[in-house]
Length: 408
Image 1 (cartoon, rainbow, N blue to C red):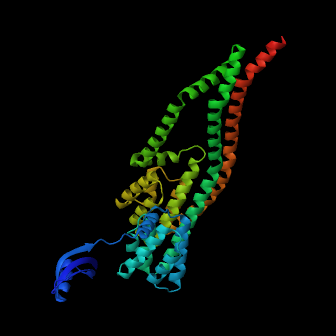
Image 2: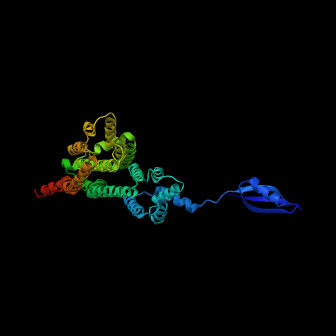
Image 3: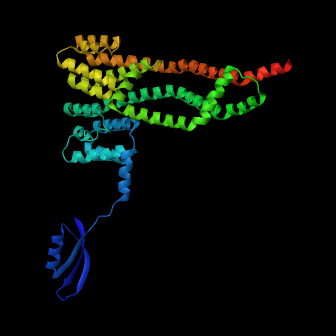
């Protein structure tokens, strides 16, 4: 109900003012007239803004949900549902304990939707940024089969494996990333500050400088004179590339080229095959139709190029082709995946075969990630060695020449 302020006169002519809560201004006027007063002015009071609530809502919309948060939520829901706790009660209990503001807000809305009679999977579909399609589809299958607790457990296992793979990739790339940044910073410092100091010394000597030294001096002079333009060009290139990668075409091209990167490309490909195998096996094994399982898997692989290829597979299957031939026609899938798919189709156990593929590739990816750092280290050492050699030749060679000339 709204709040209104009013000014009125009594039958005796006395002016009165006050505040009243009612459905509308006419309802307030009727109340005043019933009490023997004649309304002069009725104004609706604007409701006070709850700044704290708005701030919490804004914070919730900006807080990212990690895989750890989702894994913990799924395992807690599995335990509660298995214990027979009603869904609404379970969600309300978890909403009070969840630390992530975005997830807590989504869980609160889930409980409210369930109280209105909506199914859990339908309520989750309202939050696609929180609950992915593969997530809600598994929950929908669990609701249909009466095994909702099992669905939460399967999703928790899937997310845990995703987290482990992501952590391994980040750990393997952390060292080379820091080395590359260190090299870039060192080159900038040398070009802008160190080499110009030596240039003044060499200028006083008046001797002819060797070619490596002249090249270093030219690069340094260019950097000192045009560093604002270089920095601006780098900023424009960074944001331009970032904007391009956000476009559908740019994202598709980058996802395609990622699979062909030196050293890391094969790891990314096998990691993607692992995600495909586990996602498809989880959906297909839960009873989702083949075509729909392929569609859901294309949304879960996190690679637009692979997702497009899965779309081609889905179209071929819809035309009546077998899954193995459709996958083989894309030229994307490895021989191991194709072989296991063929065996699975013949035996009627595609999901089981793909789970074995996922486990095999997970071990391979883990092994290759451990080797990745060892493979990158010689490259980094070689690059740093070449840098040191160039600097030594460019800076110390003139000094050695002058020292030799002075002896003679």
